[in-house]
Length: 79
Image (cartoon, rainbow, N blue to C red; front, side):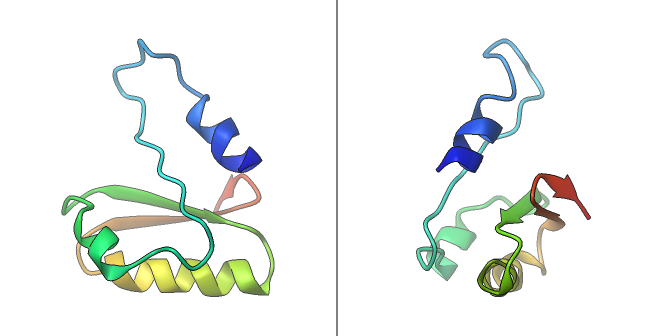
């Protein structure tokens, strides 16, 4: 929750280029949810920097990789 709140408030309401920020609880990502992400979207996957976070990031990436541009983030840093 704190990571999501930080990211969600990084931009002002007036920022035209502000990203959409979506937060999901561990285990709640589904292929149905992934299908709602528009093709060509740049998606930042930001999970905890531990084994469970890495597995979850791979799970999410597998549902989006064919049609979205993925940016893996961990502990607030892009990689």
